[in-house]
Image (cartoon, rainbow, N blue to C red):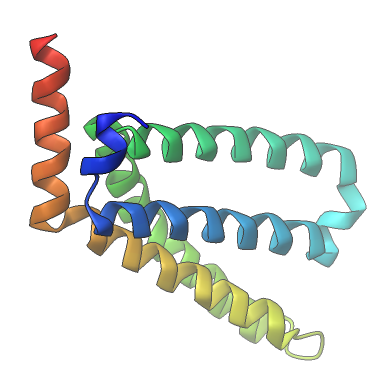
Amino acid sequence: MDQNQTSRPIKVRIAVKLFYIMLGIGVFRTLMEPSMQLQRIPVVFILFLGVVIMLLFIWEIEKGRNWARITFVVGFTIAIPFSILLLVESLFDDIQKLNPIMVLLGIAQIVIQIIVLILLLQKTSSDWFRETKEKKSDT
């Protein structure tokens, strides 16, 4: 086991696990979205590409790469208003076709993203990312 693994704060470990859960929910929601099933091949390709990119970010955050953490924070900050807007819009647009499980999963995804953001921005996490960066620059 590498030293980075043992010194990783519990908050970062929890954030990484929540990332994987959030990614799984996103994949499930995308594949189950009725409007997406009409365009199966493009959706699967875009979904695959998105999953690969997210896995890269999760892996880099897990390794202590601050650029990945900052990129997540910026991306989340930009995307959250749109995510909430799309979720609210889906509530009012498809009221007759409303799938409460999909709505709950969408809400869960947003809540998980907020929790991950909070965990990654706390002092212990920030200190660890800074220390990891300093260790890498020393070698």
